[in-house]
Amino acid sequence: MRDQMEGLPRDDGTDAPGSPIVAPVFFVSFILSGAMIFLNLLVEVIVNSMSEMPVTARPDEASGPERSPPPSLHAPELGSPHERLLAERLARIETLLEAMRDGPRGRA
Image 1 (spheres, rainbow, N blue to C red):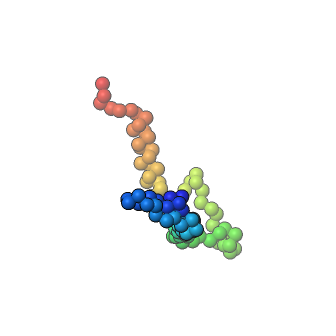
Image 2 (image 1 turned 135 degrees about the vertical axis):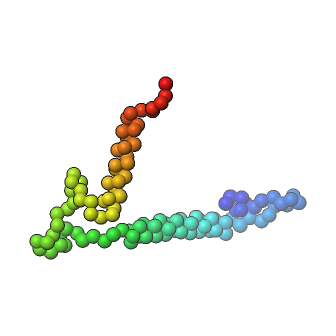
Image 3 (image 1 turned 180 degrees about the horizontal axis):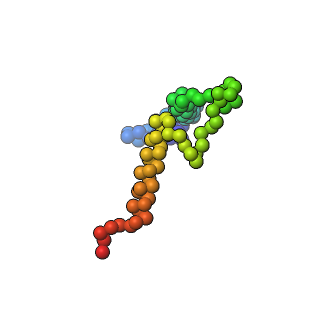
């Protein structure tokens, strides 16, 4: 910005005229518009990820005795595909940890 304000030397030895008013206005507006674009992208990513989340009813909004208790982490029911996938991944992790605990085999 300072080079644009003061002017730069040309190849023929003369100085190009500087613009002490236009240069700061351009660079400040460029930085602010870039920040606003980045902020808009960030908000768009957050809104998009929130719109893809499944909608579940809050426990206090359920009516009457048919309200089910919240799921327990100690005794999970594997009803949904997500819970089954989580159980499969946890089982794989446990087998990998057991293999790591046993150590490398076949090395002397």
